[in-house]
Each structure stands twice: as structure tokens, then as C-alpha cells.
Length: 115
Image (cartoon, rainbow, N blue to C red; front, side, top):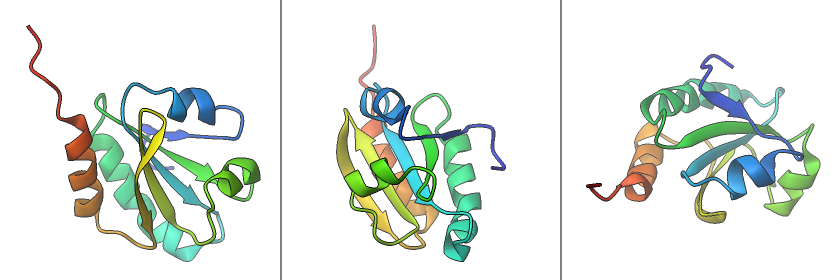
């Protein structure tokens, strides 16, 4: 992974890192052999850099983490799911432009002005 801001989510840490996160979480379901997944990787890296501190961005290797992949019905990769408060907020299947991810995250990260 090119960006150190892209986390690795697994069957064992998905509950804590994604479902219990207070921030929105963008999860890229991918596999090493998947050419479109490789093409999407730089976009995921850019999104991670842009939202550092405001949203989590990470990847699930579908070959190594079959339980979580089956739980969310991943039948085609790349599939990217945006979670908020442990719930699926948006789902993107296939190569998706960065703007679609950023628009969806922007809707969720609008934070109220604090005192």
C-alpha cells in the first residue's frame, strides 16, 4: 500500500476499527490478483490523505478475510463500502472516480462547530 494512512482491516479487527469507529470509514474490498483493484489503489491512497483525521480509509483483502467479505455480500471487486456508526452508508462497485468517494464522505464528515 502506497499511503501509510490506508489501514488494513481484517476479520479480527473489523468490528473495532470499522463498526465501532466514531469517524466514517471507507473500506476497499480488493484482492492482489484483481487488476481493477490495483487501478483503484492510487485513488484510495489519495482519499486517505485528504481525509486524514476526519475519516478512516482502509482495505480488506477478500482472499484472506472471507468472513467479513461474505458478511457484506462482496461478489465483485473492487467494492468500496462507506460506513457511518457501524452501518453501511454507501456502496460502490467497480472502478469509481475519486469525486464520488469524496462527495459521499463530505456528507458524513460535516462536523458541527464546537464551542
